[in-house]
Length: 385
Image (cartoon, rainbow, N blue to C red; front, side, top):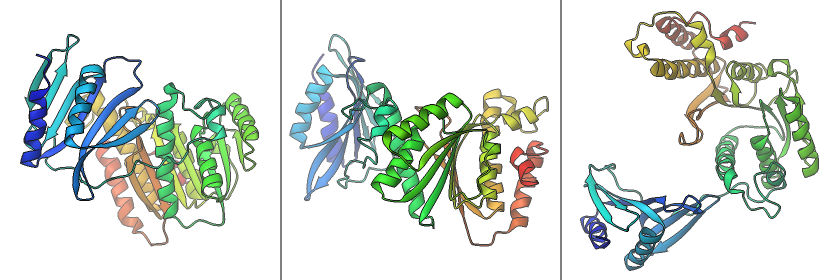
């Protein structure tokens, strides 16, 4: 059976029931195929129904709108020539369709994944904050013509997602005319360069950015790239985070600084009264080592994988509370999708002029420490100096 009619009838029936949510195509026939997925949703344009298709390629997304008749033609082509798997999501049920190598079609129904429909507004594609920039070529993200290299597509998406987050944070932060930014643990500098280029060249801000990195070869490499790009107010220094001495910091960034290096960065930001502190913590070894050999009270912590995740949450919650104790408003959220990395949490602190109830916050900290048997968090030790 290679007739798509039963699947089209399921789509048509969901439209008649008014419970169509979305339709996704996945599992390309060839791994070399640039087109990875296609997502369809129902939208209204000038009071008429359409299906908006988002074509997810390795290096970019493309959006097209179709009528229902056009949708059937497009699906017929894609499902017989480009993809093996399709899922129709409705409020009543999910309908999965698989196309075998011999074009045999199998349809299966499962419980619904969604309880509510998606909005039917006509959304524009997300703005790319960085497209063709010199640093992308020099760092190996794009070729000379500005085309993103396929294997660097995930890095390119991460860069734009990062800039989207930073842009939103900066818009709600009171910053001086010249903004001094320190990126601690800057690595190869993908995000450091992106931030400088975006703020300086696209937003027109007066910024001075310093990258701190322990590996001398990367520092020399990044300084050389900055020179090639003509980024006069971007430079990199080779030193441990704890040895960075510059007093004034407006924005402190530490993305994936390993273990207690995140705490060193947080401490530097707090003591410098940075207006904005942005971290993506990594490793979380200190509390695990600290509690090694102890018997946890909570039965959930009997299992190693749960213990690791719990200690990560405990570490970052305590960090957030120490920030709040020092007059920072905090937030913890997903940085990038966990399909790329499980180290995807971002911890943000924004300096506040409002008085905080330090006793209440301190009580929360002590309660958490007592519950898990933590004698001292590394950041707490730094703050006691």
